[in-house]
Amino acid sequence: MTAHAPTAVQAEGVGLRAGRGGRRRDLLADCAFRVPRGAVCGIVGPNGAGKSLLLSAAAGLVRPHSGRLTVLGQPAGADALLADVAYVDQHRPLYPRMRAAELLATGRDLNPRWDHERAAELLELGRIPLDSKAGSLSGGQRSLLALALARGKRPRLLLLDEPLSDLDPLVRRAALGLLLGDVAEGQGTVLLSSHVLGDLEEAIDHLLLIDGGRIRLAGELSELLAAHRLLDRLGLLECQAGLAPWRVHPVDPVDEEPRHLTLVRVDQETQTRAADAELPSLEELVVSYLRSPSVAGWLAPGMRPGRYGDTDQNGTGTVAA
Ligand SMILES: Nc1ncnc2c1ncn2[C@@H]1O[C@H](COP(=O)(O)OP(=O)(O)OP(=O)(O)O)[C@@H](O)[C@H]1O
Image (cartoon, rainbow, N blue to C red; front, side):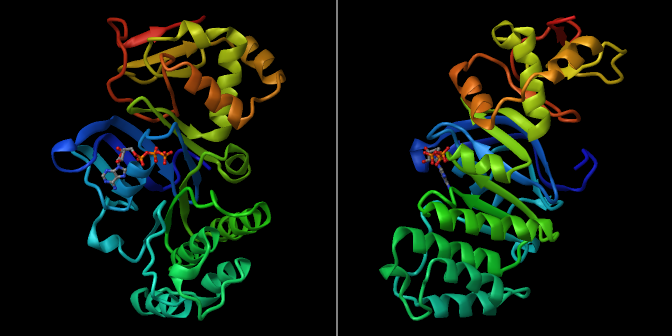
C-alpha cells in the first residue's frame, strides 16, 4: 500500500476531550495520522489512553475541539457518511428485547447495501438462533451479533472497539478471517482497537499507538517494525528521549522542510546491516514504547507532526550520523 493510496481517515492537529459536562478534560492533543483506504489499522495503547474516544470521534459521536478529522473525504460525522461507516461500540449496545432476526431486519431496512449473507455468517459462528433475544445472549454472542449488524451493512469504513475480546480462540480466528476477507475483496477499511497483540499482528497492516495524550506511533506496520529495529541497532531508544518524533532519513539532502521533527540520518551501510537483524514482534515494539514514555514517537513519511518536544533552531534535530 503506498502513501498515495486514497485516504480513509485523516487527523490533522486533532484534539479530543473526554468525559461529559463539568468533568470534561483534554485527553488527546495534536493528533496527526492518516489511514489509507483498504488498510486494516490497529489502535493500541494503555487502558484509558483514548482508543475508544478516537473511534467514537471517527464515528462522528464525539466532535474534536480542535483540528480536522476527515473520514472518506468528509468531516467525521457528516450525514453523507451514514451508510458508509459502521461502528461497533465496546459495550455492544443492542436492544435487549429484540430478537436477532428483528435486528437483522432493521439492519436491512436502514441500510441500502445490506447483505444478509454476510451478517448471517457471523451469527452462525456464534450458533445464535434467529429467534433469540439480544438480552439473552452470552457476551461473546452479543459481540458476534453486533459485528454481524456492522458487517451486513457493507460499510466502507468499519470501526471496531475491542471486537474480539470476548470471543473464544476458534471463533475469534474465524470472525477475523471473515472481516479480513471483506477487506481483501475491496470491501473497505477497518480500524480496530485491541489489547490482544497476537491477534492484531496477524491482521493489521497499519498501526496507531496512543499514549500519554498523543499519538506516538503512526504508519505502516512494516515500516514501524523496520524503523524500530534500526533504532535498536543504533542504540537510539534512550538517546531520543525528549526529542521530537523521528523519521529515518538517508544522508542525502532533505527535500522537505520538516518542522518539529527529528530526522535520524543513517548511512546506507548501517541501514543494510540493521536490515539483516530479525524484525521485532508487534508486542516488542508496543511494549518498548509503553515502557519508555519519554521516547518520542515515529511518524510515517508524509505525516505532519503536531507540537511535540523542542527541536533545534532549524526545526530539525539530527541525532545520528
Ligand atoms: N464517546 C465518548 N464520549 C466522551 N468521553 C469518552 C467517550 N469514550 C471514551 N471517553 C472517555 O475517554 C477517556 C478514555 O477512555 P477510552 O475508553 O477512550 O480509553 P481506552 O483507551 O479505550 O481504554 P481501555 O483500553 O481501557 O478500553 C475516559 O475518561 C472515557 O470516559
